[in-house]
Length: 164
Picture 1: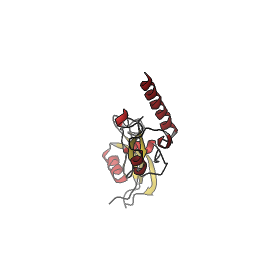
Picture 2: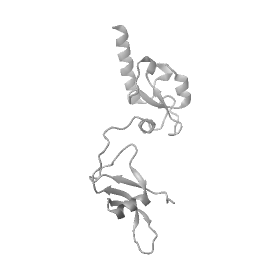
Picture 3: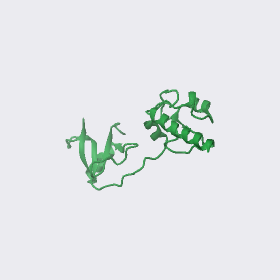
């Protein structure tokens, strides 16, 4: 049975092991790592571990004794897009949850858009369905400033391609 607290795990140099998502484990697993000697405590929760023979608080942050290789790239997926777009639909700015998020290609795949960070946005299912295969103009221009900038660059490259 878990008590519901989580512990952040840091590398031996006190840097996070991963950012998306932050590498956290249940506090019970963190205590096991402390007693095994594979980690050391950095910060602790306010709550004490209730045992008759141990005076210790639940760990909130631990650091590994040995260094773990850190991922250099963030994987393109629903969770990364959700956090990048602040959990909002790029078109109507409706709040989304991780369960109901859909990917939308700003420039549709059929018109040369790829499966890249620059071309994908979070969208609600309604907007994604209504946008369909449309180009990002008018109503379907994403409202996010970063996404809008990327869309402008895509459209300019498409226009220059047409006139050549």
